[in-house]
Length: 475
Image 1: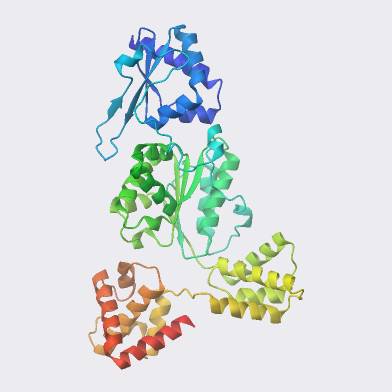
Image 2: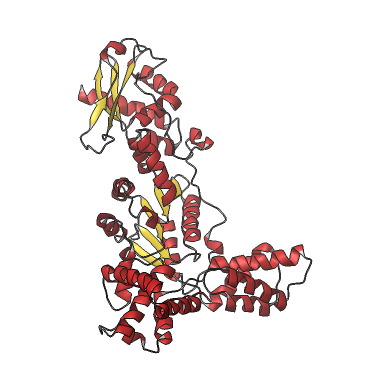
């Protein structure tokens, strides 16, 4: 009977495959297993209640037709649902049609009565297109490789992105982690990878989501007792792109569920792409088992673009907007806005807007006004190296002296101030700050920050040190 049930279900699948889209078949029918056939009643096992409800809502007529074709007019269908316990117990359990209901099922129903038939988390993205089995990718088509210009600062990351686009899940870059500071193009690049994959492999399911939204969805799924539906949704994705993965820091429940989703996708040859504002080694409050997986593939850094790349970015932006600006103005903007690409494009947009609204010609004087306002109103991002340089110069010592093991009071205070401002002005972890400032541990950095806070209240001269350095680092 075991071979007969498999033969019957195989014929059913063959008929279904010819009548629906390949992606739909792959998503909703390949995971199903036939578990029993007796008295024209076929029992099939599905991964979750969500899965069952989806079949009932979208494929009941097709299932009825194919079952009647294979088993005759008395055909019946029983669903067996197998999933993890919502509260983390890994032992599977099953729910099926109560025996007192089975005889009442007619071919036109082909349904299994369930308690609490929920539709609340079928797709965490409530998108009308889902009814046509088109999981919206959430990608922005304006972010593509054509307008992601290559330079020394991004060559490795861009090349790796292109390799993944050509063969998602089939390269050693899995996962691909793109990291770097604010406004350097991380989100642009991962969108470009997703857009390219969708163009080359339209049958693959690509999904972009921020780590913050992923966390919110997970919390909602726990509230609604639909954690397994949430997990299953993400396990059917072919290319999962999660932006700002550092947002998972300290969120143990979300990290745990992402760990299981990541493992499933990776083991099944699916591609995972991540972005972060820091390298895995500098991520704080992320479980080691996750960090180790982030290191399985490639971590590629995006750095601040050099002058030539900044000029190219401006020219590309102007070309796309159909605007002509003299080269000397372009070079002026590129020389004076160095921090990141987002600020650079923002200054150009402001320049064009001022010219258009006030009917003014774009001159070097106008560019100077815009750049001065823009730079003044933009929070400066500084590196730990720069902070050490400024502090060392202020106290008239070498950086090597600042980092030394000496316990002389003025050097210790200078070192503590460098740690304090590194914590204030960068996103680096305490461990990373300590490592870069004299190879200290995170506890030393924490003690330094507390000491600076305390001395600022009790020591007038020390308070002046803090104020002076703060001014130098924010100019």
